[in-house]
Length: 163
Image 1: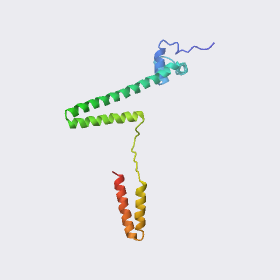
Image 2 (image 1 turned 180 degrees about the horizontal axis):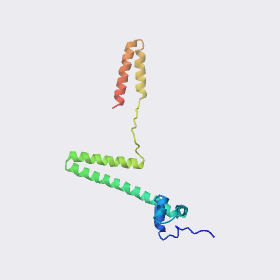
Image 3 (image 1 turned 60 degrees about the horizontal axis):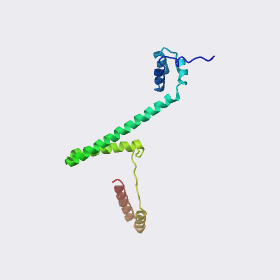
Image 4 (image 1 turned 30 degrees about the horizontal axis):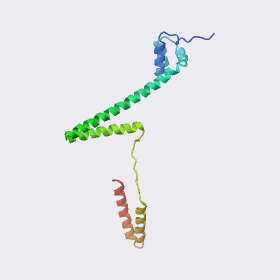
């Protein structure tokens, strides 16, 4: 005859299950409810699947709540911005814009639309490469002039890409 699970028949089974789902140490649960660590360990496999899923549902609900809080903050910041613009309080309006922007960034990160770090896009047009090549080719017989123009073009190029 199979052994009966002591934890399944424990008067505080729901509390034991809750602590297991929360990931509390088995040893601590066993001590708290005067059970052996082995019986609590075995009982863990008896937990109802819906109880385990409940933890995931709770986490999703917390994430949804956080998202709603950020959206609420953004709405409030935009309302403050509107009021400060009407009152022509430009210093407060600037602060409201800053806060609304931060909320928007956070929402973008949460949605995965914004990534951390910088992205630099450098676009070099084919016409620019062609003009540069023609100029340097025309200066080929004049070595010093070619070097001078090449350096000037590099300085110009670096100045434009950093702005």
